[in-house]
Amino acid sequence: MARPGTAEIKRRLVHASGSGMPLLYILGIVDWQTLGYLFVFVSAVVTVLEILRLYGGLDWRIYDELTREYEQDNVAGYALYTYSQTFVALVFAPHVAVPGMLMLTIGDPISGLLGSAPVGEMKSLSTLGAMFTVCFALAAPFVIPEAGVVTGTVAAVAGALGATAADGVKPRIAGYVIDDNLSIPLVACTAIEAVLAVAG
Image 1 (cartoon, rainbow, N blue to C red):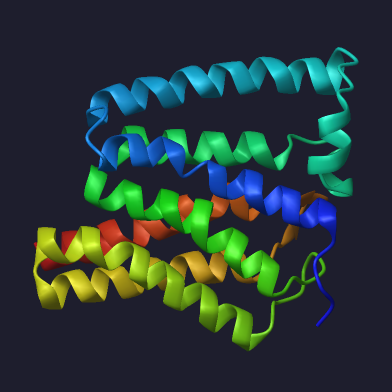
Image 2 (image 1 turned 180 degrees about the vertical axis):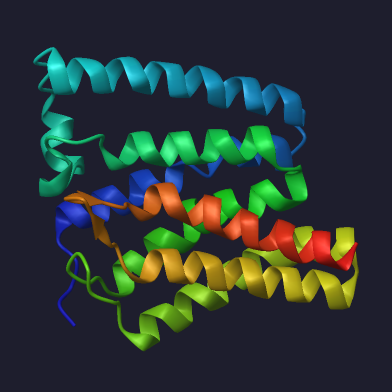
């Protein structure tokens, strides 16, 4: 397996730095509602930047370093990353939303450093296994105390499987790549919530 280049490592470090937002809540610095407001504010800023980048000629060097080729003329991954976390923060309870966020900010960069795949192709089984393990470890401390050992474990497994599937392949639909920055939190949180709902 080829070692990731400098640009890829930079992307992954920036990716992981997004853990600072949910950590504000985990560490008790802000409450859940305030975190939601912060996400909405950041999403608004990102939206303005993307409009300027795509239609206003904004051409910062950092975009060249941190965006991929298929993002040049589409909404960039960093924006989808922000939007997906904002959505789950507003829709799901903390014990569901925080694991989904961390699967994106921690699980995804770890998976990306272990291996990647071209758009439309699946990552290796070893990379998928590592992603699942990391995501389960991130979800379990939040859902098991909330739902109990059995239901919480099943929910954590479901969330980890969802995140792993979303991370494992980037499909192209109608010419647009479905970026895992958007899909990981949405799929993971929906899977966790579904198990908890069925369990009552």
